[in-house]
Length: 409
Image 1: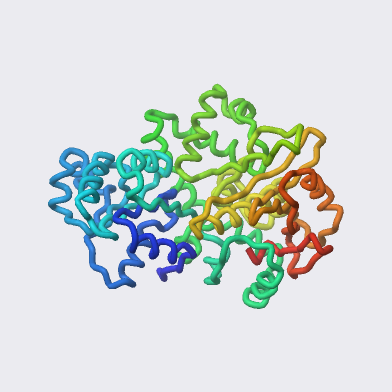
Image 2 (image 1 turned 60 degrees about the vertical axis):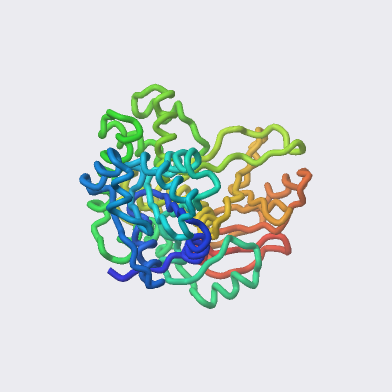
């Protein structure tokens, strides 16, 4: 299987040369260890590599961390480091004693738990880098940068990538963005994502929650996936699954901690009143949503009742990843007030608020941007806006509203 270059590589190379400890977090199968092994190979560095999925190595790391580091002398790459939290105090001691940059290359699947462990033992000593599933640009081997409203950038990208019909967009959404799938290693999506879910629940969920009914948790994930791109209603999800709302809230926290879902919170300030407070729910990978909600083909998915939700989830996820890959916190929100005015995405960047509407249509019009004007009441200036849609050509509806094809993200 050919290696697929990742947009985050320059960031990893930079911090790997500056920090003693580099920790790449993210869900299973997104290519964390593959990324690090590739970069080490490109640098010509031969360092020891150990995976704590190996039960023998895990036992040693857990019961005798000092001996573990005598056996595996830094520099070392440790995969799935969340299985041995006892290693972190020993890593801290070695860093405090002068371990050079690039001594510890770590990966792990439980993002928030690892951030807690690293924060307790390695505050100020570790570079934390979240890695998600692949972007559209990575899949097409094209460089990318954080989302921009620069028309020249999109025109140049249009020349480089070319038009993409809506059918191709939904094929990509249905296939998902796991590296092994994008590289063609796995072609039976039902088997791949079914196995992925089983492994995720057995290894990650049960490690965070203890004993849990695997079938019930899978049903819970389906109920959450059916509500992607919607305002979070925990009680409704709980009712579908037959569990208490408190349990549903705890289970959603597990999905977030393990990099399966993320939230957009509503944008508000003192000038924008009567705002809703609930976040909107998104999945990092549309292929997983397609599997959970049982859409068997891209054509039926695109034409079905969830077509618009898939488009929104795909676009928001792509923009979210574009910031993560540059080492930036995604400055993304949404707007909705009690007067039913709504903006799918509000990006706060460069001292301005940029409104974005996401549509499945290939023929956008200015009526779709009518809610953008509510941002003019904010104390922060309104900036360039955009409609991201299934159009195959970059254009503009007026001086303040670009039309950006989703296929160019």
